[in-house]
Length: 133
Image (cartoon, rainbow, N blue to C red; front, side, top):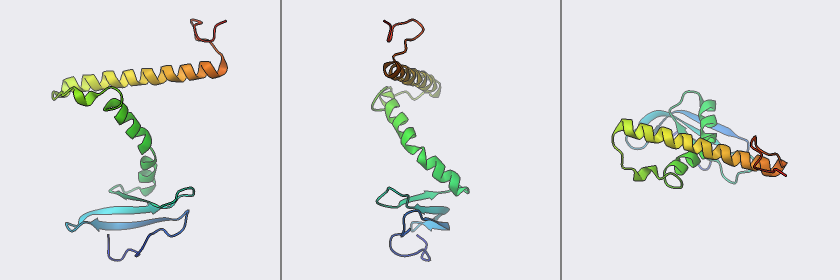
């Protein structure tokens, strides 16, 4: 980190957001980048982000979507569709497989959402299978 940056853990107080820019990282002086440090209420430790994005608020907003994105990728790869086992190298074939698996993923999420809605409200679907009396 930049030698002018504060020493010790920063930010020091919850609710504090600090940014260092421009910054250069590693002995190879990778950069310029921005370093964000935010300590949100409810967390025991601050969060540190390194980004090359100019808009730091947008970088933080994208980071907050990370958990959803990682869940989707793990569902596609190792926990669900096992795309990594296809060993496809042809971009066209891989694209088709990804499109099919994404559509299947959306269908599964839709079905789960529909089942959850029907079991909590007692509604039936248009065919009358779920919750029908």
